[in-house]
Length: 219
Length: 254
Image (cartoon, rainbow over the protein chains, first blue to last red):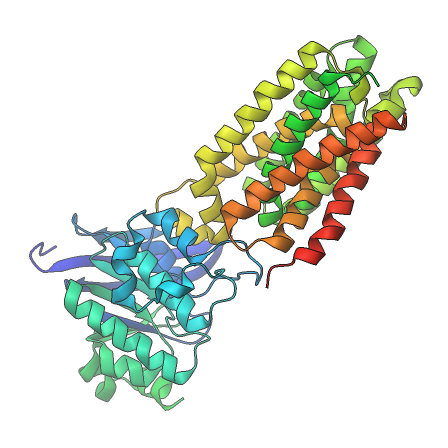
């Protein structure tokens, strides 16, 4: 691994759950500060890849993070009950007492701190989860469909926020996304999955050369 | 009126601790687990009656074996916890009913707070405090793994370890509460204060504290009323906390 630049190298990654192959033949590497989109249809193994990268599930092959890696993880969405008795403030305090330091940066207004996590809007919850991830002072962020369940205007703001955070924290970012406009606008690399790796390369190059990706783009 | 303090002290400690632990059980949708686990204790209580040792010890050992089996099966299979508890509960109830001496079955099922000894009270006070303290120690991990198991595990927390400690705390509280309200009604001590508190609060700290307070107050009121009217305390305690639950609708959070 070129330790100067590289932050992640994945080779021959294979994930099997209950004797069923969920994902295989995944090979890619990522440099510090790059933004990579992971695209593919439902059930393609995108979230499984994240879970393997986070060390949450068993896998074979190699996942090699650089030594200085600190991951922040923003899960897809959480099934929260509306009357969950847990305020935004209490949730963030589970991670750090110093939670106020990131509020402004992610655009969380203080007045929602005492609202229950179950009643805030999808966009607000997404910001709270991003704040949660930032509290660990990460240099790598994993976003699982950052805009699932958020309306279009909210979606754009979340991506602007991601862009801003990427620039200000020099973050390496991995995003699972279905939105091809966003993928082409914000990312350097694209990894296409469909139970195995279909393609991997620079965004600009992939847009023109990969049939699979064009197929996704058209849909 | 001559009031015996031992049942009251025993009752309020177990009531407050059961309310506190119950709030976390309801948070994790484990309310019926507490109810069912209390029945798992019955064979242990029955053996204590047969061989004349403290029913708390019998109950706790039976519960410990029960949760160990549930936890092991849970780790090895994808069967839902509730269904495993359902199996354990009916199995244990069947065994318990067969071996409990006939003259003791009533006390085993609805409790016998009037006859607590000083040793019972001392065990209850110490263990109730211990349960609350340990819960506060695992609070952060427990709440986070309840909200999102992936977030907890990606933060390096052992979800399985926390779950086991929590089940152990539940087992202790259930074993203590059985003396007061019996195996049939124990579920009420953990469920009702929590759902009443949930009606009235939005924050977790407020919810857990209020649940504990409701557990404490309904236990105190229930024991005193039962003593006054010479009725068994267990059912009256459950009616008292049910009344608080009814009243909680008047103070619903907005």
